[in-house]
Amino acid sequence: MDIGGRLKAVREAKGLSQRELAFRAGLTNGAISLIEQNKSSPSVSSLKRLLDAIPMTMADFFNEVEESASPKHFYTAEEFTELSPQDIGLGEQAARISLRQLGDASRHNLQVLYETYPPGADTGEEMLSHEAEEAGVVISGVIEVTVGDEVRVLNSGDGYLFDSRLPHKFRNIGDKDCVVISACTPPTF
Image 1: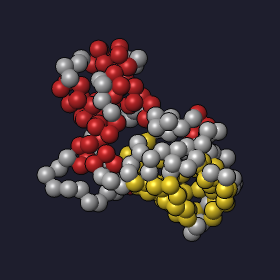
Image 2: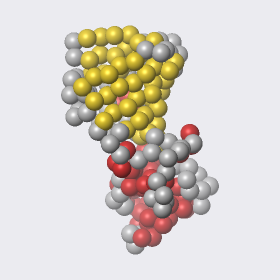
Image 3: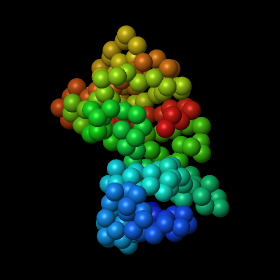
Image 4: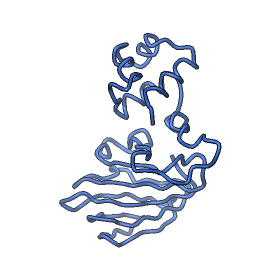
């Protein structure tokens, strides 16, 4: 995806100059110019600050991927959307977790994530709870999953399925990255 071109088109459609967007987002005019020329790739947090200043959600920004005349059925690894754990309500401890979303979950009844948990990473001290059902399969590594009072260590090939209204959390207790493919319905973020 041409992030720079998309940012420029959105900025101009909202009637903002580079200088005004830079001021609103707390970035330099030069940084925005480099991003729009695709000479610099913004971090997820910088892109979030820019979109908050417009204002626009990440989902709306990346909707271009699915706005073609015919529905999009296939995605390369580069077309997955990296979600920021903090922006979706996870604590600072989750900063190292990578959550890569397949397609635009706001347009579907199912959300699919490619999750990577480095050693020691977890979803935070507070248990998660949301209106959905959640399932996943561990592709590699090991992860400790807590659902309510139940704690289970899952290895490669193991899986989980539960009502997401039950308090839950995830933690990599291994010494290498843990990769999980998960699904949630309806999408929660």
